[in-house]
Amino acid sequence: MRKIGAFASCFIALAACAAPATAAEKCPVSDAAAEKAGGYANAVNAAVKDARNCEQAYRALAACQLGSSADNPLSDIVRSKCEPLFMGRANPATKQSYKKALQRCDKIAERNEGSMYQGFAAVCQAGAARDFARKDARQR
Image 1 (cartoon, rainbow, N blue to C red):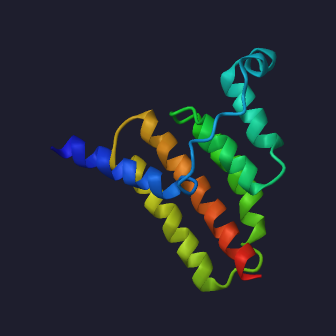
Image 2 (image 1 turned 180 degrees about the vertical axis):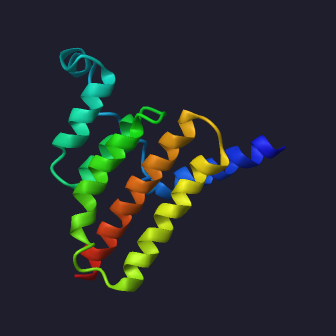
């Protein structure tokens, strides 16, 4: 029963971080791009890194996630594109809310064993950064 609860909590966390209810986005990394980059992981890294903005970087990560701790550096790339959009103007309350959102994501990996949950937590953190950047853009 505990495993079902852990799975359910992970699913809920991922659903909360996912893009709004639309058709699942297709990963923009083609087989040819993966071959040219020397592997799927390298091609996903390039897709996330080359994304024009925070939103596109997050969408590439969400659609192409690797499902392991290899998503951690991809999440860092997304966060590096999203955080500057709001952190410089953020008041202390917003910064605290963001920190709490990241900590909630960390709990996914803390409560569950395995590299897969590290990846879930990383994608969740990237989603939190994207969400805070979106919210800031709407408030301006």
